[in-house]
Length: 169
Image (cartoon, rainbow, N blue to C red):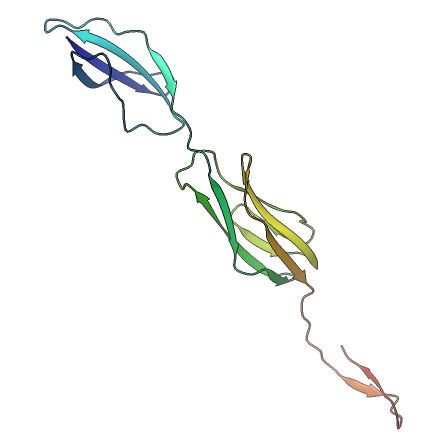
């Protein structure tokens, strides 16, 4: 007896014949996508005619969980107005838990967007982390300093034998 295996992707639509087996009542389906929904049915064929399809079963393949999230940054010390870039490495690369959400512990000091761009806002310290589901990355510490200014118009006044006053802009 031959058996025809039918498959559909998602929760509705046509089922397409993907395989046939002879004198076996089992089949391993391969090439599926993780964390996806499929439908299956089986019919028999005796050489003359095909039976009606079996009941249709719906199966969701298992997810590929995140094992680790690692952050790296090109600069950990910035001046106000400065920028840095955070690189996110997720293992395994084909995980299905979703995208990393990047956060700053102190957005008044430094902000980070979804692309990993850090902007220094005010002097202070902040930490950057990433999270996917319950999995959390390593912590990156960041220090923001005042923006450096150029000293101009240095002048001396009140000059005496033992002291003077300096002033500048």
